[in-house]
Length: 382
Image (cartoon, rainbow, N blue to C red; front, side, top):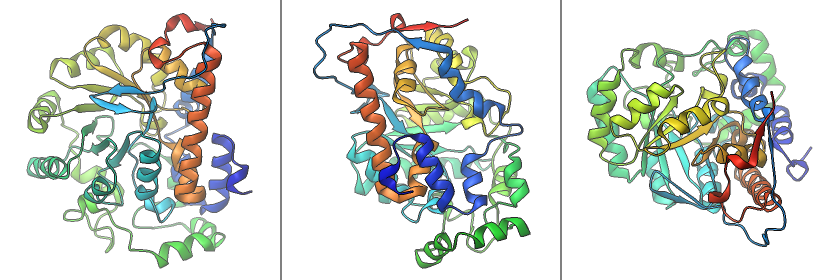
């Protein structure tokens, strides 16, 4: 199977599965506990149908949106994800370049493997910095100041990860950073020597956003210990309000799900929220973001930009979320599988296919612009 044979999400997933060692593929592919929420995220989109309008004279469509003050050519963006150079040696460089080529936003994680400064220098498109809240308040302030100095456009605080989810696939293989594999996990690495050759012949794996605090290269702290020892489970609304004030720019909370929390985010001055269950990787059994979207939009959509992520695999999924009032839609695995499959070329192809699906869908829906999508275009099945 080659990149040119990939036409949808599942094709990219299969090519990534063939190219990655099992423990790394399962790190991307897996979720918490029974993975119920992971499956439900995509299934939720099948609970409603699109109702197109015809004879609208749609020869051209405008897919652009403005979210948190950022103008995007597409109504979807690349959500920040961790450890990207583990999946392909180009890592965030490939994702940022592909996103820039399509005129959309991309995110850099606190656990990213390329520095936010490098990516900001290379690309003028809107850049998110995804932030974890640490027990060390001085570290938090330093990281905010560093992102501000780099010219990051949007600060995104992840609020659903004060502790790591129970990802049983990783427990079975022994996946961790640094690697501490089980025998079965090591055997799976042996079956994919091309990945190992790429890993050892390119620059050393590191976490430049945290390089002064977490040294993965010498094995002094694992990702698991980072979550259990450095992140602050006592984080509260007062802490976030102080961060919003210190950042003094577009500020977003990722992982909000309830109406009450959405209202509180608006009250303290956030510009956006992302409805998200972390791709099903945190609290299994939690509600899908799509199922929660209309309730939250009705409550705060006139005060704050509401986005969502989780389970998005098709352009029709993007259109359904936009019709319910989402300002934009984030994808994660939707570019991670293509990254693992073929680096920048894979991500470019995946974003292009998703763009084409959105454009085609808008034409078939009779919509010339994203603003014309509304709940009149949807019917929910009971």
